[in-house]
Image (tube, rainbow, N blue to C red; front, top):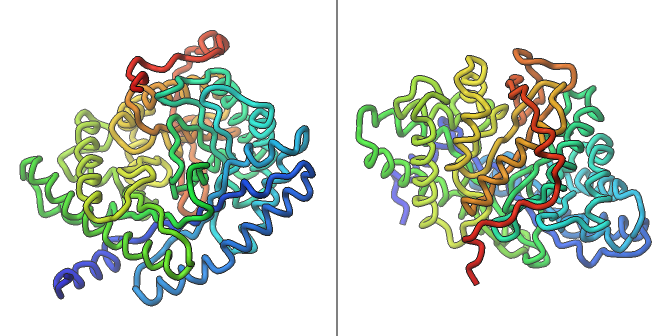
Length: 452
């Protein structure tokens, strides 16, 4: 039972330490919308989304007011569109993106995810058509997010898809060059993608999910940073215990919102994602948590160890606070969305190589990183391959969301706005990876995939 101290502490977390519910995401199955006629299929998609999520925003706003808990984003995720569109044959799949965008605007949500394909072992004709339509789809829509899964610990890495995605990312940046390449901020390449992720740009409604579901993503870097200020000089086991207790309290708030949203929307509760999701606001940074542990600047030696402690403690504390934990759960390190990461990248301490090492122990991967506009497609593919290898070998989700900013060079910045923040242009290695990428084929799954 909550006592007065717990209640007052939670109010302080919300009002002074940036605690919020980062997203309430409704997942919707679109498998029933398949049709050989693309016009009919797109209409079915629009109708079903609107029918399912027409009161999502209104109900979330009610919860915000009644409970005093900010809900930053209201979102929708749908079945990977490559599966839905396959029945349409040789058609312009970007029309599905327009249907998704129109439905999202009708429902009033912030983003809609699921313009996606799962190609970890190979690409169907529908998968390839969807992937090649991504630059057009993301340049002509406002709210649509796209994700492609190119590898898994069970299947290995589809290097043909990896090579193609390097090209697609370049094309998407060029198609949105008038907006700082923002299309790439809505496109993520996964290894071991999960079916119940509520966070964009990687959210999609997995085929193993129910007809519709409510997933909630919590946040709270500012809360963790605040409690660690009283832990200066204390040993790491005490630091971990403090983070665990804090993560428990943060996750309980998420569980409360998830259950209430599920009840009011008459939709099954799916999961609470425990991830610490930063924002560009001062005081809401994962990097500043790591620095509070004793690092002068995020990215210096010791950063990976500090992040490993943080990620593990968050999961241990949160797992006891919710009836169902899922999604990605841990700590995100999106450079442009984290004030401390931006500062560390600007001073040169935080590099892509160091971020890659950090992704071995955190929730996802190389996220919201801007690189020079003349970075080659092969170099981007090689970055994806490296990150996918980390995910495949370590049986964890990894991802790449990189922006080759048109016309920009190292030292410049791009302004993406809102939660997407400001991205400093970070250097990449100039040496070519082209011959490696052009080999194609599939990197086999590791031996530990043979578990049956």
